[in-house]
Amino acid sequence: MTQLKQDRARKTRQQVLEAAAAAFDERGYSASIDDVVSKSQLTKGGVYYHFENKDALVQGVLDATKPGLTGAVEPQELKLQEWIDTGMVLAYRLPRDTLLRAALRLSMEPVVQQSLRTPWPAWIQHTTRQLAAARARKELLPGVKIEDYGRMVAQAWAGIAALSPALDEGHPRDGGRADDESQANMERWTAHMYASWLPSLAISGIIPLLNTRPERGRQVWEARQCRQSKQVAVLSVVHRLAG
Image (spheres, helix red, strand yellow):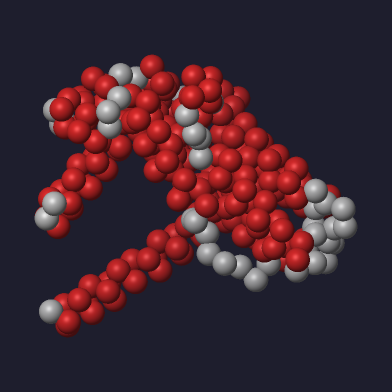
C-alpha cells in the first residue's frame, strides 16, 4: 500500500471512529452500524472495511480512548500533583470530547463489560504507578494502600461523570442548564473529590502545595495543547528547510 493510500485509510478510519463515538454517545451500545454510516457520510462498505462488525467498532472506540487516559498530563515535581492532574484533565475534557463520553457510556453497559476490553483498567494501573512514584518520593503517609486508591479514584470519577447530569437541575441535551455550568460542575466535584482524600493520603507538609482548584484541568490541558502546537510548528519549519 502506498503512503498516500495509507494516509487516506487512516483518515477514513478516524472518520468512522468519530462517527461511531457520536452514535454511541447518544444511544449507547444500542446504536447500530446504520447510525454510524449516517453520521460518517460513508458507505456501509466503507465502515465494514475498517471494522468487521459492531463489537469491533465498539472496541475501536474504547481502544482509541486509552492514550488520552494515561498520557494527557505533563510531569510535575510532586507526583501527587500528576495524580490529581490526571483526573482533573479528564473532568475538563469529558464534556468536550465525544470519544471519551462514548467510551464512558459503553464501559458501563453489561454487554460491553462481559465481552470487550474497556480502557479503565489501564487508567487504574497508570494512576497506581503515579501513587507508587509519590510513595517513593515520601509524599504519602505511611501505610497508604496505593492499589486501593488507584481503583477508588477510577470508580469515584466515573460515578461523578455518570451521576452529575442526573443530580444537576437538567442536562444540556435535554434542555437543561447551559453547557458551561454543566461542565463546571464536573470539574468542581472532581476537585472536591481529590481535596477530600488528600488528608488521608498525603503528608501534611505538601498538601498546601497541591493544586486542586476546579480550573486546574483546563489550565493543564491548555498548556499541553499550546506546547504541542509549538512543536508541530517547529517540525513543519524543519521539514520545509530540509525539503
